[in-house]
Length: 225
Image (cartoon, helix red, strand yellow):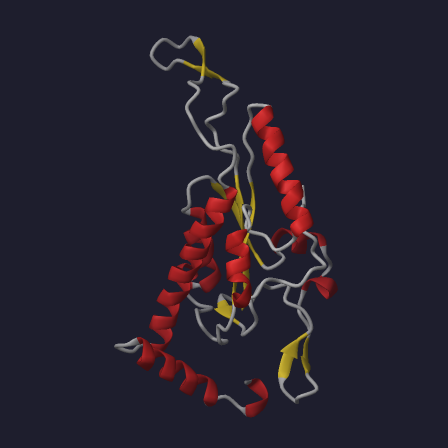
């Protein structure tokens, strides 16, 4: 079930140390207590737990990725990178699966002119990616991890050598690996975005790539920056 309070503001890069200090990598202390209690309950019941991790990427300018080749779309690359992590069984970008239950009028992000005269969106349901390309909003991806299969309470299986019923071997395992998976997911998102940034802006050094990116943004009309 859902543990985090969705009304709380999203974490920012300034919150990384606080996230790392949490045993379940959340800023919501009430949710943290409930998660830890749920893990303790699973341990007492000789069971394992899965969960959902969320990764946010700030500062990506619009236009990174492509709307053309399916395998080069930014959302496809991020989904593939996260699905490549062991035990990940589902990925969504932005509001993802929730969008399927909404009418179009409530599913898309309205574009308006802000008080500063610049173009902005009233929401970020798309998770920072539209048409296979970044749109300038915060990139938000989530990945669902299944429970660890090495369950102390051994499940039924079949001996493939004899075809006879058997029980799975009880191997030592953690009761959940979701906090660890969040670290791996963050790394995969970083690597994927870095690849696309280099493809877009090039450069032989970090300084040159950053300068190319700044020049790219400065080339836009003022109201689009």
